[in-house]
Amino acid sequence: MKIMPNRMDRGFFLYQNEFENKALQVLRSGRYILGNELHSFEEEFAAYTGAAHCVGLASGLDALWIAFRILGIGKGDEVIVQGNTYIASVMGITINGATPVFVEPDEYYNIDPDKIEEKITSKTKAILVVHLYGQAADMSSIMPIVRKYRLRLVEDCAQSHGACFEGKMTGTFGDIGCFSFYPSKNLGAFGDGGAIITNDETIANEVRIFRNYGSEKRYYNKVVGANSRLDELQAGLLRVRLSHLKELTEEKERICQRYLGELNNKCFQLPQIRSGATHVWHQFVIRCKDRERLIKYLDEKGVGTLIHYPIPPHLSDAYRYLGYKEGSFPITERYAKEVLSLPLYNGMSEEEQSYVIKRLNQFIL
Ligand SMILES: *Cc1c(COP(=O)(O)O)cnc(C)c1O
Image (cartoon, rainbow, N blue to C red; front, side):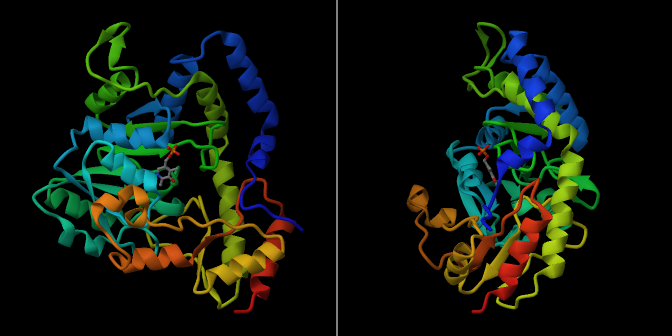
């Protein structure tokens, strides 16, 4: 049996007719940018998250850097972020000239709230909370810090569509929640896409203007903006996917509950779920001391895996200028060496799940 780490085609075939009908409808409409599909998607996604406003953008990275731009956070400012995130979180901070200040993760792979305060300086303007792998971060410990130091809070929800902390949706705790609709995300488009959500009407309006060359009225430009619009085709297809997101999330939950219940090999460590948090399982991430051997073994058995992420941002070439070296963030670096994402996707058959479980349980270190 051959199992790939992800199968995005399966997610398409689950609702093939609906996706194809919507695509044809948009193609035949003659309206491809800033039309009714986008409007409707924004309303529906805001309603889904419980936020007052949603503004569609061209990608998750755009959502992040535009969020910090609109909040006025740039050169000379510091933004706190966990060390073990996808590099786009960090780029969202540095594109505006601000400095990322890394904090080590906890055992749930999210920012360790106990290590935030020691990093706060007079330059700290914001915390970027990443709900990594689909599990909500410990917001009950983070929010008091945000309030105490009067910081801005931006949430990177690129992996956490629908995840909650104590019943409240990720993305609605702070000033701005940033989402990606990259095809492999839990709410995936068929190309690039992103959005911000916010309860602040002024922020929503400013982002709406910024994404369209800084113009509200055609040829009347208020600010130097960007071209970052979620197009009609993607918005329409996202509406179809969003209408099924509840069952898609439940399906992933069922698969991961099987993994949690049936994987019983002491050679690796299973993910843990924080009390108060929900996990929407963007990735099912295990940890193994001899990961390279596990990868090789699984590969020989036809089970594909991925690493999220092998090089922490502070050690990547792009951020050499920050001056960190190996050993700067030991927990972050250990996770980068040990984490492994198991095959997981909507439309994964029970046979495929059983095969992954069987092979993993047979691994001997
Ligand atoms: C995917 C992702 C992003 C970037 O989203 P794009 O749409 O690919 O630009 C940012 N942060 C995290 C945590 C992500 O997983």
